Length: 112
Length: 115
Image 1 (spheres, helix red, strand yellow):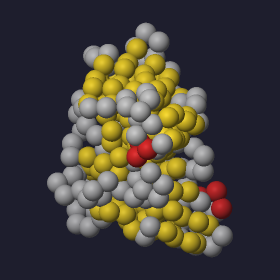
Image 2 (cartoon, rainbow over the protein chains, first blue to last red):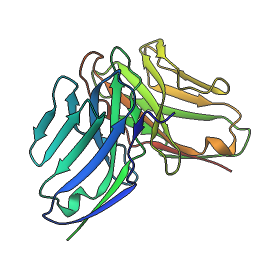
Image 3 (tube, chains in turn yellow, cyan):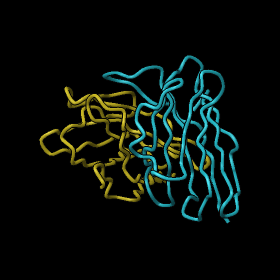
Image 4 (cartoon, each protein chain N blue to C red):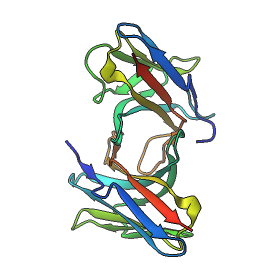
């Protein structure tokens, strides 16, 4: 049962442009959402998060948007840099539960 | 990733053998989580432990898999009588607490190959 979905397995953008990674979820009990970045042969690294009481959170080049009515969140990276090339996982946690659900990931390639 | 240690990084086992994967959480973290990543798939939650307690094992297969987090020493994920389908990357994560907002910090993973 895929409660968190990342429908784009890959995304390629030009350096300096905006990268938009999308994530959809089905469980309305999710109240905290996170993005992780993963390089090959390494564990995921926390990137940015957002609580369900907000619709936007910004940290430098990274902004996460949450649309609760659509059960959709997105990660914007602007400007994109070659070092951003990695697999990005969307994750969500239900309230009062530690079972965090991950999407299948989107592989971002930023071309110089 | 800094601080969460996993070993071994790579583990090869023959079918029927036992696999023991170790995880040392970040200093000051008392919550440990285990995830499994199958090829071309996302991370799947397996188990959540605090010191000496299993809090949530809803993602653990009912047979052959067990986990512990003793008072002293690392957390151990144990897979008995491994089968080819157990081949995957196993990630451990830790957090300082549970609550409304928190991040989990991941280790580098153990890649298990069953031959």
